[in-house]
Image (cartoon, rainbow, N blue to C red):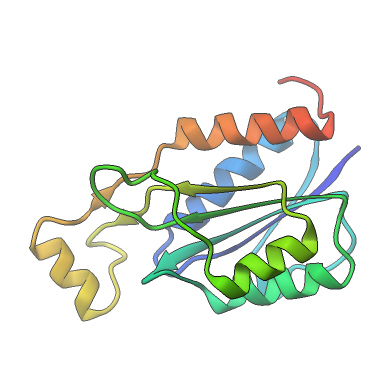
Length: 163
């Protein structure tokens, strides 16, 4: 059975929801999945998916630390995602921050995907987030069907049985 680490850095829960969708999809395909915030991610895995909320072009520090740990002894397969863009074109590709791009190269990341973000009143923290919601910029722009399709592609690549 293929072991897969899904590690994520999430501030307001949107990225955690994407990580959960990836974990659920791979588990349905028979993978032994560990879903963990990066601070608790430990051990050796056949594959890893690391994701982060993307704020002002930056990854969450805990997700960057997870990549640094993986770079010391990378799994055979690594995929990255970030989420955060809002509005029309929320799934348009966003560049990795420079430090993350260097780490992605070191771990041999196969793919980097951008998923739309989620900014809702219930989880908004900080005055900027609340102001964005007041000004009509909030909402849930995640395409969870697209996330599941991406996770299925990962399952295909690592040889997980079809669901």
